[in-house]
Length: 316
Image (cartoon, rainbow, N blue to C red; front, side, top):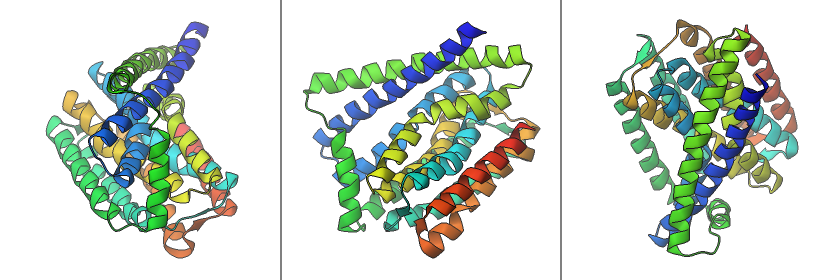
């Protein structure tokens, strides 16, 4: 048991550094290809921090562990809003000024609602995985289009964030970072899936429960670090945009890729418990974003309390 706990912890560490290397290498390569800083910042935030979830769920799907793949996404989306935004708001209240962020909230809700009919037959088939990936392409196009309309202040926030990933180095170093990062993500994902499966069997709990808790929290580490640091630096649009974009990416890309690789069988519990919890947590952002457009410490505490309450419900 102890060996598998250590394997899990080590897997999370390898995942984190793998994601970090992949983001840095990919960001530099994209910059050399002429990608605009604003677009680079937006995509690096969401796609880079969701890389651990992508690899863990894909590995789980390949091993026929659909519950673990889906639970990872459901748990990560719960943690992104309740835990990560809650902690970020407690670190520093976040005034969201960017139109891009407020426009993405309806997109997050829409993609969450689109997932429901795909789950109704208790399977996400390959064709439905392709549908989700198509939705991802549409979302990325939407991000790139709205990036042109963003205010100069918010554009500078995202550009500065992207610039932080552009450490000095040549082309071979950039490619090497991408290769090392990808390798780290694969190894870390494999370690986490193996350890989580053993822990679930040893404790006599379902892989769904382990996926929603341990695995989801482990793979959400990059989002937590990114949003908390952004909130501390008063970069609210990055902190909130990271969460919204990651939630969209988790459903559209991660479940899309995992289902395309191998059809995912869905437990009835996901429809009855995990999915409603994610939907409720997502809806909690609506009054904050459309009234005050500021997530104060009080709202952060409410989000954390909701995460704890829904987490208790999910575990029981």
